[in-house]
Image 1 (cartoon, rainbow, N blue to C red):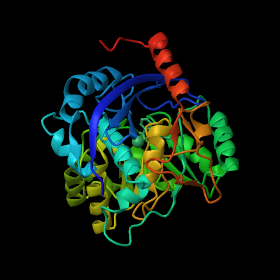
Image 2: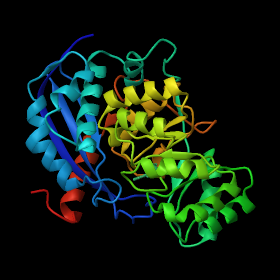
Image 3: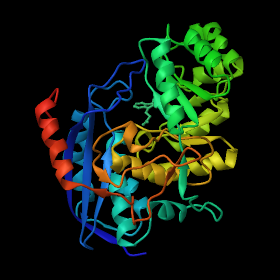
Length: 384
Ligand code: OSB
Ligand code: MG
């Protein structure tokens, strides 16, 4: 494959209104924020990545402020001028910077896109080239939809009915203490057969075991991240006390975290978010661990723009991803999005991998400029 040489890297802090915000156990972001990253190559193609940082350090510790700062001051200088013969070399270049995985992922993703474009490959096929034979892209991702905490059960049911009518086959509901057992009971009474799962975003402790056991009655696909966002040990104490499968999100930040969690029996499903583990190279290692352990795997999301979403669809189209992913059609998130064409839900609750090289979608420069201007006018704090 042709190497690429990185001649410039541009950062674009953006803000965009959500069509439907997502209220979680830790709150709600007022608008979509991210740092969009453009990697310019000597070979003539630009690659695009999204650092899926949020405004508040509620999901993870990174924010727009830390993401922009760490990229600008520390990560960009490590890649500028480098010749890359494989995108899997990127983590070694960035190794001297600890943590900051959302920022690193955005940068690595832009390199993957540039490398795939220069080599006229879809990102999905480039990723598959690093996996054993038999792991070619299926050409589509099987997806569901994530629904935030609503004021009432009736409001929740209304949104679920709308999403089911659109064709989503799996519903994920955000829960928190006081908005859990009655919610699940109400949904199950109305919709006995819907593929349903709950995401607590770390809202409970081991003192809540008896409470969480009540959720076992509702035939859930899984319960996501009930306990601490850094915790693996306590989840291993909880899992044997539940019949529902525990899915870990926040607390699996590397392949080694996953190996430890498997050893301890802390999870039975993994939500793999590229942003959370610091890049696609780490994603590929985690994918291999899941395949080796027959661990059900799906790809999570951070309400990405078309840039980050297209990359997630590529990963989600690999056959080791066995459960519906948190990647929804463009009209669940933004109007307009930053990219064309939009992702449209297909029969079978699927999103197709676009045919074009790299992430396969085209950034709309004028919309990017509008989103940058939007950040400047609505930003809750300055980036320095
Ligand atoms: O916990 O999975 C989560 C979005 C932001 C932060 C955390 C989470 C989420 C989602 C979004 O659930 C799913 C999506 O991108 O559609
Ligand atoms: Mg989650």
